[in-house]
Length: 388
Ligand code: KDG
Ligand code: MG
Image (cartoon, rainbow, N blue to C red; front, side):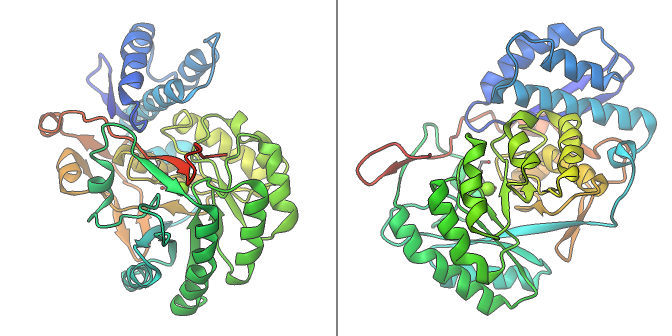
């Protein structure tokens, strides 16, 4: 879902308001609440507008409000960059690096298929790969494409949340072998990531971290849900495998304890879900004090506007770690979003155009009316709703 903020001086800015399956709730927040409150304000006052929308509310936070604030904030940075004639990373403080390192996804219905894909990504120049495989004995595995060609085919047609079965036991039966084989086949130069999508309890995550230590992961992503941030002490006390958390966090408060107690190594929030570039900048600076690096979420259910915003943040942030990358969209989305991001040898270059450097063809978008689509819901084999 793309938001456009228009000024009376002929400039406009774009923001990503995507919130898997709940986009129309964000649209209502923007249309019914934000638009009437913002008309007549100076779009240059990004900081004041952010605080007005966040702190000015008696009820703060929440994914719908933060996605709406994020979309407006990105659009305002886009406008400021266009007004200044500068790319957003320059407004943030300028370059900390010449290019942005990416990690790409390899997933398959078994280890062999995953590792073939990983090999192709290494051939294409990627130096960091996320390794996922279907779990034998389960009908579907979250985050694995199965027989689908791409994420858009997989995620684009789920009008209600599909239900999937999860078994920790079956997962443990496959995971060590998968990562061991990946390290063996891809060699020591390639950085490996594995995503657990919050399926484990803290003590199970601790066990997994320990089990995978010898394969030297760049990080283990979302082993457990961090709703109770304190629970990450259990994981941390048992393993030196680096931990990356945050794609479901909406504000700095959701990760404050994780960061200041150094319970994680990478913070993975997105500009879309965390309240925009203004919030991400603040979180990056806070994280830097505690040796935590940024690794922004780059899922297929975030729009190219979000990726454009991240590349500016990644180019600037002194404590940037790595950017998740699932490609530059399918053919449909490339007809709608016009951008000049360069991807080469496993790295990306933020646009040098003023603002975010991405444009949106509204006429082309009209050919694809909004279709609600959901991520799956997870149950245990006995029917218990999962996700600790
Ligand atoms: O953004 C929600 C999903 O697409 C997400 O689960 C994917 O974990 C994911 C990732 O890291 O991209
Ligand atoms: Mg993830």
